[in-house]
Length: 133
Image 1 (cartoon, rainbow, N blue to C red):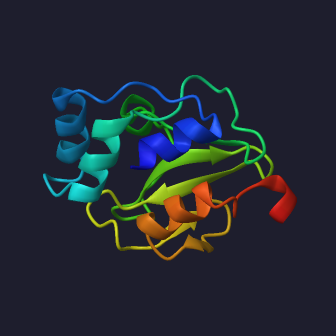
Image 2 (image 1 turned 30 degrees about the horizontal axis):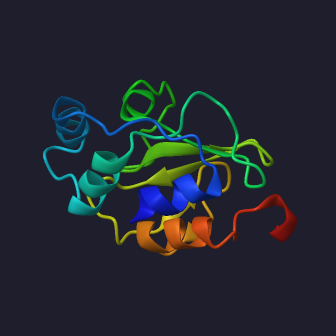
Image 3 (image 1 turned 90 degrees about the vertical axis):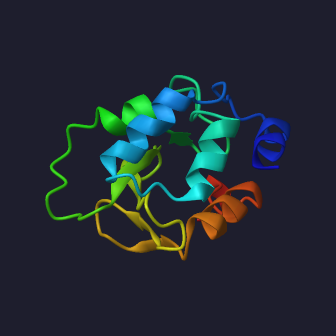
């Protein structure tokens, strides 16, 4: 399970999101929240505070942080920010309605991963560690 792998890596995880928090994210994407994200947020609701996971320096946002983002997202369609990358002062963007869509970087809109599954696999495999960039 993803939560177990992240815990073993020393990632500072929040507890699981509540049903109301997950419903709020689902409402934000017009009731089309991908089951992959329901499963992830049912395991953990982002990372605690801004304690960075060394060596990746990525902070995964809670649902509250996602929903309270004040970014101008008018050009992003259904994409929302879900994580900060401290090394590059950038953010990762996801489509909460479709976990098979690419994970994008906010600043240059480049593809960071082909899908949510490949993002998380890359994360636990160390592909986002500062030493591998």
